[in-house]
Image (cartoon, rainbow, N blue to C red; front, side, top):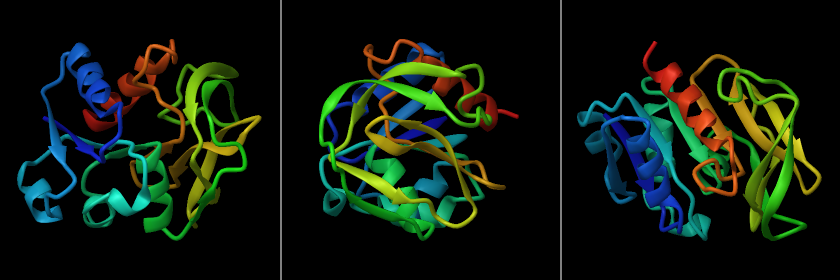
Length: 186
């Protein structure tokens, strides 16, 4: 079973639906669960969804810190930023705060962006963004308006994407979820 940690974002239900469409058992859960409650559910993978504000992320950061290395984790938008903070990176208000289609340039395919190089179109949300990679993370992709559109830990199955792979405006977004499932089910 996969868990989607909802952080009050408008697209969390679409993450759930995408995983269901890919024929996976999934639960959409609130960010008020404790890390121990999440661990007891024995998820195959965790997707930390988006939301409007870092301060409304509940226990998401604690869940990431507690389960990183035990369960594969994919952070989307706010989830991406929370992963950066948990691991020692920096998040700032974006210079270009917008919801728009953007060309994502793949710097390194890695497991999570496998098959998406050299570039793809995605729906982006840049209210806040990762300004500095955490130690032991690699930048996987960037765009004209965001230097760190995707990142991955060097040795743990922990990934973050600033863009939204779960929406129709990201035509190849399901491939990101297929790649994540492949990591989780090895």
